[in-house]
Image 1 (cartoon, rainbow, N blue to C red):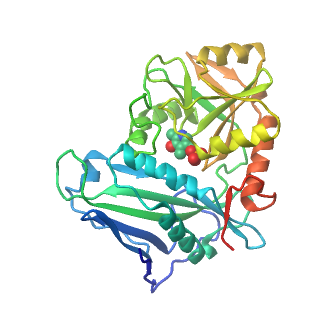
Image 2: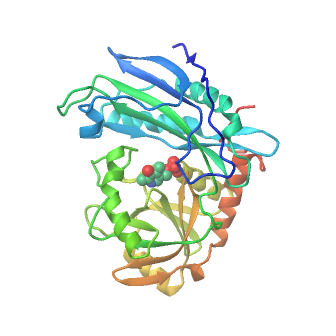
Length: 352
Ligand SMILES: *Cc1c(COP(=O)(O)O)cnc(C)c1O
């Protein structure tokens, strides 16, 4: 497919300091449409609103998938995207689950590379900053009725983002959710499907009201096994090993999760992917066998956990501070992302 570039006539003013996450977008976006059985009209065009009929299927039935990855620019001007091919692969898996036609992963990756290079002046260079990349697909049939749509829009938008945490890597407080669940086996929890997040908002709001930063999700069936935190995967350092919940069909297979596992193993640290109960977490926190908890995801990279609340009891983890393993993993991962460290795992897509 051909990729057209439609130039903008007026460019936006770039922000002088890094804006709040996800609020400021660049001059261009990538768009292509699906209709009559094929993806077409691939173009990089000026960033602009879509005009959609109120009956458009995505508004009513949420047939939508999305992705999130980042491009980094260091002080030398080198630009890297972190494992973007993994995002498009995962996006196709999400599409398959909600009957959205497959995308050509190679084609959209090369379109993304062109878009990022076109917008390279928007990529911030300070430590911890990045250009956040948001690909998404929406169903656009102008008709009511629950069935697979025949028309879709795929788009990629970009936003410069600052360090995820304004005051550095402050440990977060988690609320362990017993009433609501995010996902269950057979559902869509292991795919990046919009509806999953709609289902999680109420818990997040309740936790925030009680002074907690994120929700720790338990499994949908027994409410016994830990699955994820907010929109991050979770790791526990206990008994001298690192444990993370196994991907059992209701956990999102995070690219950061996968990277952290590979990185820890390369350092000779034993990583177990297994089911882990909240009872075990509580018991090992009390005994001191559990020394660290941290979340992993593209937005925050690593998010250390200082406290968690379960059954009206608050527990402190690692004296409420960021631990040694979380710190080392954070340093190595961000080092690979901005080129401070060699790309020994072949994770980065170097653009210049
Ligand atoms: C995106 C996401 C993650 C993290 O995935 P990354 O690829 O590491 O960004 C974890 N959990 C949920 C529910 C997510 O949506």
